[in-house]
Structures are given as C-alpha cells and as structure tokens.
Amino acid sequence: MFIELNRSYSFRKVSQYCLHDVDAQTSDRVDFVETRNLATRNPQAAWRIMASRTYVQSELKEKAGVSLAGRKDGKAVGHMLVSWGRDEADAQKLDRAGMVQSIEGALKAIGADDRQAMIIAHNDTSDRNPHCHVIINLIGDDGRLLKSYNDHKKLSRFALEEEIRIHGRPIVQERNKRWHDRDAGETPAPMKKKPRHQYELEKQAENDNTAAPKAQRLLEQQKTLEREKARQCDRHRRNQERLRSIMEERERRIKLQTEALVRRSKTNARKAYDQTWRDLHDDQQAERQQFEENEKSIRGSIENGLRMVDWFKLFHRPRDTGADSLKTLFQTLTQEAKRREILDQRQQSERDKLRAEQKKLEREAEKIAKQHYAAKLEQVRDDYVLKAEKMRQRQERSTVELKKSQQNIAQQRNELLKQQREQEQEAKRKLVLQQKLQREFDDAAKREQEQTEQEAGDTDQTDQSSTDVTVQPKKSRRERKPRDPNTSRRRRDIENREQGVSNDNRQEPDAQQQSVSTPELDQEAQRQYEEQLLDYLNQIDRGHDLDFEH
Image (cartoon, rainbow, N blue to C red):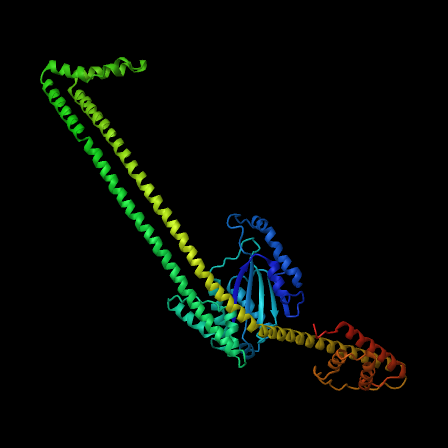
C-alpha cells in the first residue's frame, strides 16, 4: 500500500483532475465516487460545497467562539493518493468495500475522519493496480484548519499496520526497515522520489526490444550528467564559501586594525593630558595643605570659610532661596566639617571637568579611527560584490553548458519514449473502454432480463384470466445461461454496426432467436411481444452506440 498526502489551495483544480480523464472532459476512468460528511452524493456539487467553506471560514470561527488570529492563507485542500499493487490487491481480493475501509482508516490516522471528503477511484493504470484519490476539506466545522504535524509519518505507520493486519506481514520492506530504525531511536535519511523520466528509461531498458540498448545508453548518459551536476554544484558551493571566507577574513583584520588604532588614539589623548593632570594634582595638594594650616587658628578658619563661600552664587540667588543660602553661609563660617565638604566638592568638580575634556578628545580620535575603518570596510565589500558577480557569471556559463547537455538527452529520451507513451495511452484508453463496455453490457443484460421476466409474468396472468378451464400450474423457467460478452448478441450487434451492416438485416434473426425462447403465446400476444422487443433493442442501440475509433 502506498499513501501520499499533499496540500493545495484550489478545490476546482484537484476535482477537475480527479473527476475527469487526462486532458479531457470525459470521466471514463472514474470507477466510483463516494462522499463523507457531505449531504450530497453528486461529485460536482460535493467539491463546490467543500470550496464554499473557505469563503465563510471567519464566520465559522466567530460562531464557534474561536479566535480570528493566525494565518489566513493556509492550504485548505488535502489531496490523498492511496494505491495498491496488483499482486497485493489480488492476494487480499480487494474490492470497493475494502478500498473504502482502508481510506477511512487513513483519514482517521491523520485526524480527518470528521472532515468533508470525497473518494474517487480510478481504473486507468497500465498495470491495472487499483488506486483512489481522496479530496479532503481541511477546514473543520469551527473554521480551523487541520494541523499537519508529521502526517507522512502517521500515514506510513498506518500503511504498515494495515498490511500486517490484512496479510500478516509487511509488504513494503523498506518502510518496515525505516520504522525499525525509528523505533530504535535513529532518524532514517529522507527518501527522494525517482524522477519520471528516469523511471521510464529504466523500464524501457529492461524491455526485450530494439530500443533497449539506446535506452540503456541514455540512462548511462543521464547518470553521468547527474554526477557532473553534483560535482559542479559542490564546486560552485566551495568557491562561494572560499570567496565569502576571504571577505570575512579581511573584515576581521580591518576590525582588529581599527581597534588597535582606537586604543592608540585614546592613549595619545591621555598622554596629551598627563601634564595637565599633574599640574591639577599639585595645585589641589597645595590647596589642601594651605587649608589644613589655616584650620589651626581662628583667623585661618575664618579665611578658609570666606574662601569656601561662592559669593557670586550667593548674591545672585533666587528670592525664594534666601533662608537656605544664609544657613549655608553660617555653617561654612562656623563649622570645619562643612568647609572640608565644600573643598572636596570643589576639587572633585575640577577633576570631573578635566576628565570630560579628555573624554571628548578620546571620542574625537575614536570617531576618526572608525571613519577610516568604515571606508576600508566599504572598499572590501565592494570588491567582494564585484568578484561574486564575476564568479556568478562564470558559474552560469558552466551551468548553461550542462543544461544544453540535459536538453539534448531529454530530446533523445522523448523521441525514444514517444512510442512507448503512445502505446501506454492507447492501452489505458482501451482498458477504460473495455471496462465501460463491460459495465454497459451487464446493465443492459440485467434490464433485458428484468423486462422479459416482467412481460412473461403479465402474459401468464392474461392467459389464466381469459380461459375457463382449470388453472394449470405455472411452468418453472429454466435457468438463464450466463452471457459471454465475446459471443453474445450485443457483441455481434456492435461488430456488425462497425462493419456497416444495417439494422434491418440483423433485427429479423435476433427477433426469431428471441421468439424461440419465449413461452407459448397466442398470435396477437406474440406480435405485440416482438414489436416491444424490437423497439427496446433499437432504443438500446441508439443510447449505447460506441465509436471504437475515438
């Protein structure tokens, strides 16, 4: 069993593909259609109902009390493909009920069993393996999208368990091996799908025909080209990384040079203020010594107090601060601690002012160094952009050469596989037509048998009511032989119609043959029965005329 789930935006496009033949408006390849959680069985109405929910998603959220936040452009269309191998299907005697049961289990595995869904079975594969397409509306009744966390793992686990449940053993051994690795705590490498052209070439190379050697040669050329593409991609990647590393190394060196230049600039700025700091230190030291000497006498204390007072600030004070200023003046003149505090504040202010001047000079030097760094860095980046553009052009030229080689191989491959693809399409068309003819033949035979039995019953009742003799027991009809579609009258009618035989030439023997098998009737009933039978056959011919050429 193979299960794959994809997401898209358009219900119309997915339904157009699933409900019709390839590149046609007919639906001969559709075997059956079933719906889930929908109030209709009409497929054309079903996909439109599912699509209409995307237009009222916000209203559904509001009605359910769900927040309107989140992504508004989520993919609401789920397209699931479920396929069985021919041998697997024959082993389990797969029928419609079995296919639907497996699909319902797959929907439940991903939590979509309550979502609107439409199941479409196809019968157009060349190897006649049964497969179904499932269109899922991922928008729930509350307007929220179905979460898609590890859907591929959930479906893979379901397929493995389904195979073991039905066959008693896993059918796809690679899937079983990968799940053993996962259960052991390992993460298997992701699997890549084989390209269709490679699959077709391998299939053609395995055939025993005249095109097999050429297909094998093209397959080898394709493999060689793929290896060359991988080497080229690796070479381009390494060249790009090398160029990027060179640019990063140059940036790192310029940054180191700039940091060293900034440090030297700051050091030079500090050296320029060394003498100024020494002079300030000497002046403040002398001032403190003079202060200590004056504090030994009352006269000196008064002198220190008068020196510590900021007379300009005192006389130009605001009017509302007069009491505080006089209080500070009195404390300065009378308290030694206040005078020492004012001296320390004054000397600290002088040091802060000189430090600010030094920092300003350092910032200017740092700014000049960074401007030099920015200019060099801009030049390095311009060089990188120029070299990267030249490298891109060289890589594009080499890529174009490989593209030409790929186009040449693709052209030869398409010419070689053109006949094979046409044969496959013709085989699919014939298969679909044969199945359609078989269904029509079975339906016509069933309707004809029902009508014959009904007319025979009506005739028996008429005979019994028209006679006065004792009612005879009803004769039991012999069992009707099963119809062979290859030798039946309907097959002969279709073959004669293809050969241009008129309806008049074949209706008479058909009627005679049919009259032999009818029960004994009177002359009037026999004539009416033949007229009804001929009208019915003509109606069937007009309604089921098949054109084998198209």
